[in-house]
Length: 128
Image 1 (cartoon, rainbow, N blue to C red):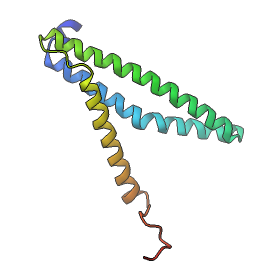
Image 2: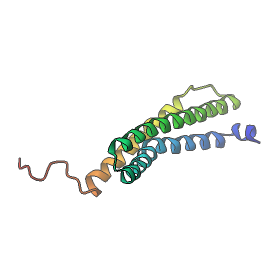
Image 3: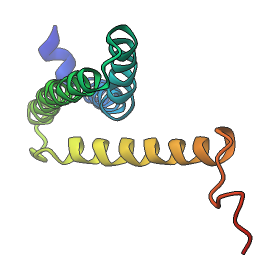
Image 4: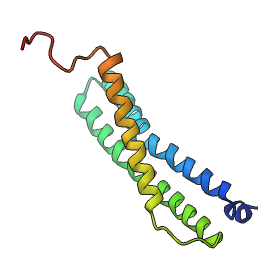
């Protein structure tokens, strides 16, 4: 069943969509989750150092885990292409997905920061 799905273009599209979702989790979900966890640790222990240390270790481990999962998905995509008789593109699709998702994440953050968070690109007290 899985091999039959891998031989269709639908399987490749599904793998790319999962890679895209995983890369958004990498860029957005991981930092937000560990900021929240760190805030809970700092609130419970009143120790900023402990919160920062745990957040740092958690972010590094989470990123490593997600990177391994994304590499595995990339290998599945490559196997899909080979099963359909197409050439092996290497990890080009994963690289493209990571770049596009990072660009989208940065764009959304900048729009939120400038237009919705109440931030100003120029400090309000400075007159030019």
